[in-house]
Length: 267
Image (cartoon, rainbow, N blue to C red):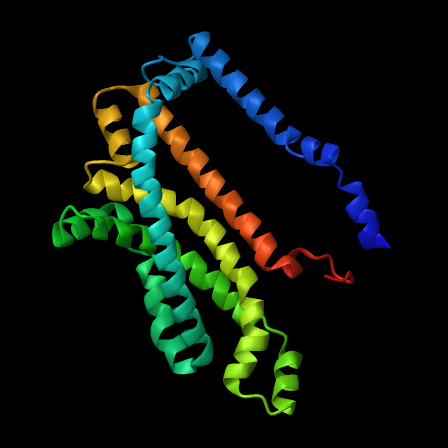
């Protein structure tokens, strides 16, 4: 009865009202920002008002869109590569204590590398191609994926594993029926984090060496003191990251609905 009651309470009006607090907070923030600039709190050449950024978004919409396509392709490819590597590494570390002792310290050490320095070095090594940008984005994105996926694997109910051993199930069958479904929520959590971090990696990679993309466009705008245009590029990057996060959230709800099911209720 409680599950039916919850579904009845989620009406179209409820869905419409849910984003209102965030929209009100955003509107208040933009209003304070606008007043701060208009009242002389800061030079508009240093911090443009929101209306100037909005004007740049409209005026340069074609340029922003073409560069977004480049950056979005790099980010999606980088996340796909990071997910593949993270899944294989997480499963390997989970199944082998030797692999855990050998690989986990290296994975942690990889995150101490400053991307600002690594990106130009990869450009020098591999040239001004798509490959170094892909590697930079994957390097930034894969560690959250490894951590959340490995935590999900380690948190599998030991009673379920004992039950599978009682039925004389093979290690592969146990992984397929018990551990793999349990790992999917952790993998999606890591993917949502990677969606945010990969945008930062893409900017660093494009600033280090690219002829197209929002990171490259951001560098050009700053060098030419086109501050509203620079903020417009930042806004597009932020909106893309939010959209990608929302996409992974939607996929998670479709693929692993049990992860969002209240305890004690049927799926």
